[in-house]
Length: 107
Image 1 (tube, rainbow, N blue to C red):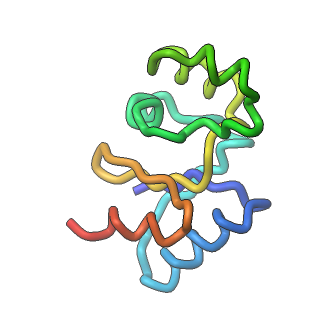
Image 2 (cartoon, helix red, strand yellow):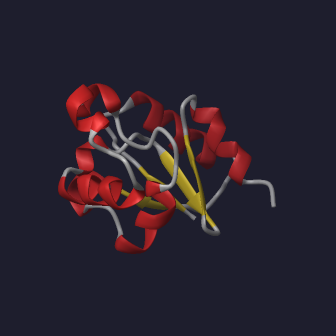
Image 3 (cartoon, rainbow, N blue to C red):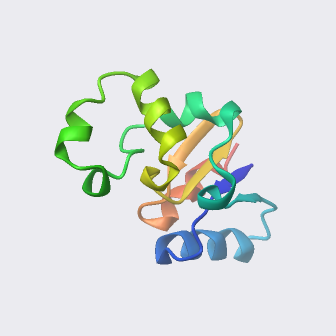
């Protein structure tokens, strides 16, 4: 289980705290420093709302017509990844609100 985390983001910190409260072991990926893992790109690119539309801008968002374009954008500009994102067993959920990540904790 991996959490894509930005420590400067309050929602991301809240999600990490929720996992810690439940004593869930999670690998924390600081994507702004480490980038986004290639093996997570497919699940991330297929997730609706994964690109921070406000930061990307209308023109950029209009140009995203398929998952390959989303992957290319996030690879080149990981700061546009919505956060936090929890990935488990090939599924992902955006933690907005942070409690959304709890959906992936149940088998």
